[in-house]
Image (cartoon, rainbow, N blue to C red; front, side):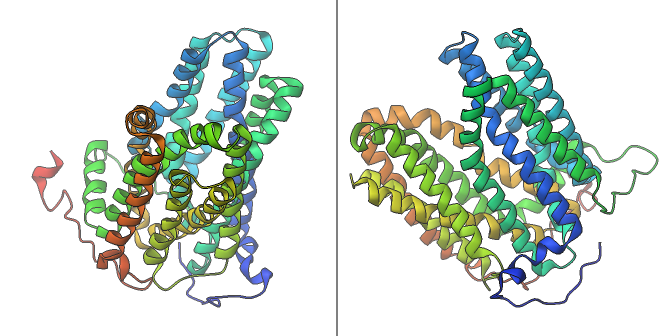
Length: 437
């Protein structure tokens, strides 16, 4: 798709200028559908948890159901990247929305009929997870096609990030109200309907479709994954930031999510304190998204890396035994930083990676960033039992500071500008036939 080169002001002052991307028909349709679908997706985990518990299941059953959603995402993510590059993001996302909507409708019907054993929940949630694994790489691949001017791509990613931040706060709260009033089945039915809205919006997009495969067998999935890996490793800015995020999730964010509630319960007054911290974090993410609208810093990776430093603050406040207002203040800054990081990393990837590789590159980036997260969640508690929660949280904060300094010292991240050409020349399997075997 041709991209217009007309420039818009780097720092528009009027709100209308900052929301100019919403005048793009395809993006506007996608934004409405995605936001609606995302709200339902944010409600569903609350309903699933109470469906398990109300059905007589305990912690073990709930753990099985939760793992059944995560495991397919990890196992299928790379395959999802290949499929997105083969078929195009729109087709894959449309199938994902339709399949997940059907799953939730069946789940709601079983709950309403009182016939939802744990094994059935595990199967349904696993199919739901496969749909998410297909959706994630396709999402990264489709966004550049939704805007005609590349100058608006950053605003598009910022608004989509805002939608995620708002749904993270609003979805669980709304789910709690609906579950209390009408039960988990009602929430899952609402989720199924929101997937339908998302699918309808995708169906109405006017995007160029991928060319149909030619006659004869195409390249194998393994070969395409190898090509994607070669392109991934040929771009230092990409694998460096992916490694940084992966270690962040292992050493900083996972311990924070496990030990933050524990510390809040022991020292800050309980669940209400933890709810305040996470609520302020969400508010910070919304604020960060609003601040990013219409802004395009000259060195995006350097700014994103600096913004990531904010994630050290709430862990440091917990580790230092500070009062709740200080922890909340740290969470606010971390939330702002999360929005800045997310918008800039998404935009740089979509601008600097060729369209035909975006699905696979997004998949490799997502897998590298989040694969170690479950390990961090599993070991945070035992390590804290041995060393103390405060020390683990403080160590995470120190790691984030040190990692930020190291990454900023690397020219591939520090000096990279928007207009710098991507010099990645990854050898293709055609150049090296032995790699395609």
